[in-house]
Length: 346
Image (tube, rainbow, N blue to C red; front, side):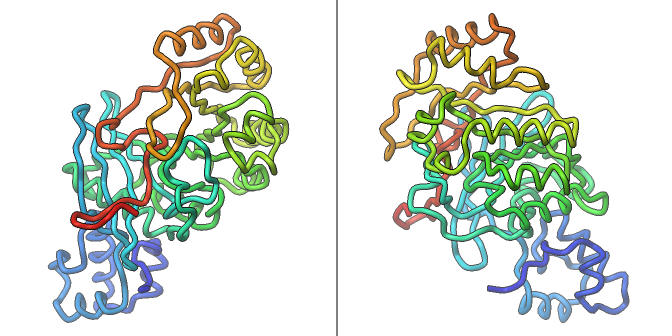
């Protein structure tokens, strides 16, 4: 597989790609940040473009785009080695959010999520993550100078902290003032709770919003839903979350999928009160989305509202998160390795 040009910051690109005169490197970088393919950067001589194409890939390609009735779009991305994965663009009144994938597949195999079906294929490199942002930004009408994507959530397929080095490099690239420059305060990273890497991120930065996929209030229930819980207890995750807050000053977000007869009784509400007590935190309640290979049943709207009221009556900061893209299988938990037109689902 070819090296990816989007793996490089401007300084790294200048040191790695020899072009004459030297301003050609800036033209190349600006074209890449606008989401262009090498052939589309026509300010570069054709000979330079041909040379670059032989040596490098550029991010990822959008092979298909599906539009939901709610205005969101699911993109099917294709890599240089012909792997396929998904991401979702979600328009909001306050800005536009892109859900970014960090791995092709996932080895966490959570009981409510499609991404882990079939296991982990490979990690995405930083350039492939950045490529999702740049391609999607262009697809929704943005450019290098007129950015349409304002917020990022690393909540697509994969566990970001299982691909730690590439994810951190991506965060530095996507927030660089030389590039698309999305502010770190507008980026959320979701993790199943790999505590050693939560603490490492707290120490090393970048200081993004940390979202922890909790989904249960006891270790026993969490092990049923999330196999990784055999390694990380809820107590250890809370300890790491508090450490992250102490080092960064950033409020902790807990993601909590509501599952019928599993995690939404009054005792769960009381335990969530204790889990979130004493430091800035918020609980994002999620209506469970359908995954055909999974057997868990989501709760009703009335059950969700009742659980939300129990939490707020206990003083817990909580909301029910709006769902996007259900009709195109682009909602939370539904992203997976998918298909190209005319090929079978993977």
